[in-house]
Image 1 (cartoon, each protein chain N blue to C red):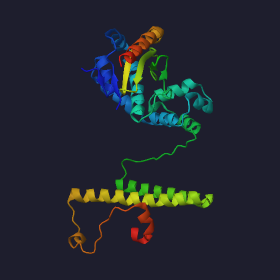
Image 2 (cartoon, rainbow over the protein chains, first blue to last red):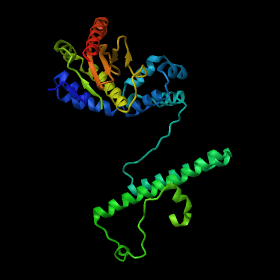
Image 3 (cartoon, rainbow over the protein chains, first blue to last red):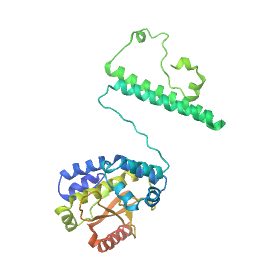
Length: 194
Length: 117
């Protein structure tokens, strides 16, 4: 076996001379998704383990253990403390994978709505013209991206099922959804977009 | 994309670990995977790559240790990150009691890798 690879799990299997080690290591790696996110945020903010430990009122070795272990070993209080040291908050989504997908989509739409309302509140509070125009641009971007992604998914759905709608057969007068920029979206009447 | 190269690991080093400390070894490997992920994202080494039990020793050598294993054998894997070739070299493996000897050997290997360029 070539002793060079993109996969550290392959390395483990080779060194231990045990093919099952690959699967074990892959499982360990998969169980570190949240931990890796925490570390990444710390590194991006150029905070040291010592600084985080000081903020949390614990020894650096605790941070080291948190970052070296698996997600299952993380305690909620420690995650909150770690994030607080990075000036970050925790946002949780409790999802029920058994609930119908339509319900989950509706839930996501309501969540987006709530967050947009929060953004509007921020614009009113700040009174800063630069912030307000930034938020205004953001609204258009959200709408643009939503229409673009919605169209692409919907087209894929129709292609897969080979659905043809009556109005398509008499295509006259039916506008195709075209690629438009956020600026163009902003110039259109809201009622025409819905 | 960063690769990992374990050509420099000797049979005796591998034998010591695989005999009965596989869990410790695998715990170290999972952290190497994290480092590889960050490097693939474009994170520069420059002293920033310090997380979990991964930390720089001297002479370009990094070391990673086991974690989360009950009553563990303190295990170390020594690494060298070659930013030019985007290769993570495994330049040593061993246990805490032999770490000063292992670090010296790892540093010599890093020197040789650098000279061979």
